[in-house]
View 1 (cartoon, one colour):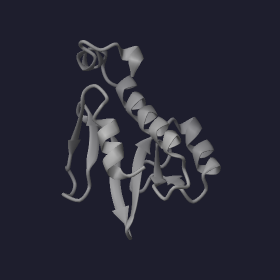
View 2 (cartoon, rainbow, N blue to C red):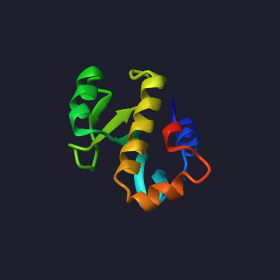
View 3 (cartoon, helix red, strand yellow):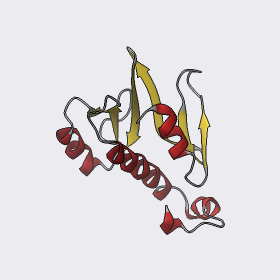
Amino acid sequence: MNHQQLIELGLGYPGTSLRYPFDPELPVLYVGSKMFALLRTHEGVESINLKVDPDEAWVQRESYPGAVLPGYHMNKRHWNTVVLNGQVPDEIIASMLLESYQLVVSKMPKASRLLLFQGDSPSSV
């Protein structure tokens, strides 16, 4: 999985947008006004920072040592960095992206969540 595939997948979720708030080379996926994925490249290797349940963060890191790391420049309890080097299967990365989106949505005020899903069922996300 690469940045372009992750961006396309993420933009398929209700209420999402792609922005560049920090740098033109640093795309960020947002749901509403909150980020749920930050994509970066370091020394030619793509990675993605994703929000994670703190109880799951260490499990992911232990399952994929060297490929899932504490979130780079993020709160290390709530964010993981996933190195896109092929070590983590694409379906697991897609699942992590969806989980990040869902965690951010779950913390939004109810009115904001309802606006996201006008015409869509929240349970389908």
